[in-house]
Image 1 (cartoon, rainbow, N blue to C red):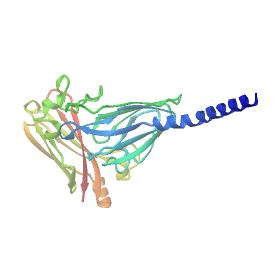
Image 2 (image 1 turned 135 degrees about the vertical axis):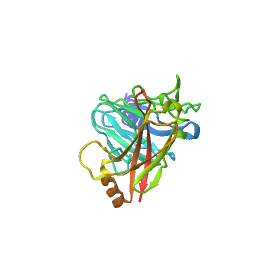
Image 3 (image 1 turned 90 degrees about the horizontal axis):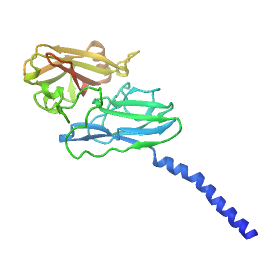
Image 4 (image 1 turned 30 degrees about the horizontal axis):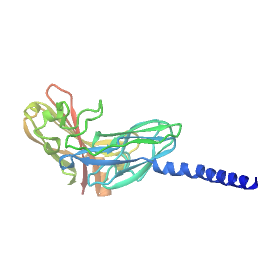
Length: 288
């Protein structure tokens, strides 16, 4: 009888130890990691892989960019602003960069939507926070062809082709978005230069170029997190190459003198004679 009690006590002790250890192992295995991915011809297509993840309340998600293309994170909606460390955010002085890795924690249940500060809705991701503590993630896969992923519904077209044929952007540009829009990633001086190759269908349309800087880099108060610091408009476009030069405003020139560099988003809106604008965004660092 004593031997049987000792054996039973030993089995219970081992089972109790397993109950303590197993949750810790499971938690470490289900911490999601979302990575910026570049693919397609010359890696001109971009996405988050995986694009969705689900964590429990107060859960943590790792976001990273291991490649040579600059990316950042802009939270578009959610029940609260996540607490992030090591992640280049839209409202920071450096809203995008190469080769970074950081984490974000989520204190309130709900759905959080984010996209890349450089590539906009082309790179949209979603994180769901469950109050019951469940943590899962939807794994992505490496594309097997150079065709770009379809943009999220309602985001507007930023890719030159799609499953149903040419997008509005492709019809207005003379060539692909990567070849028809040329904006050097590094420039010097108090203005930003670039060019857009307009197709015959885009002739007679309108080109608007906006320069957007992080509010923090301008020492500005209030909202929104990005401030327009330059704008140029070209109307009655002709087909062919349209060049532009957009001057920085006084506040941006002052920030450039102080910091010797200024990170910008160049927002390009191309409108057909009878249509709504399609948008492209390029990242530029201006130096003195």
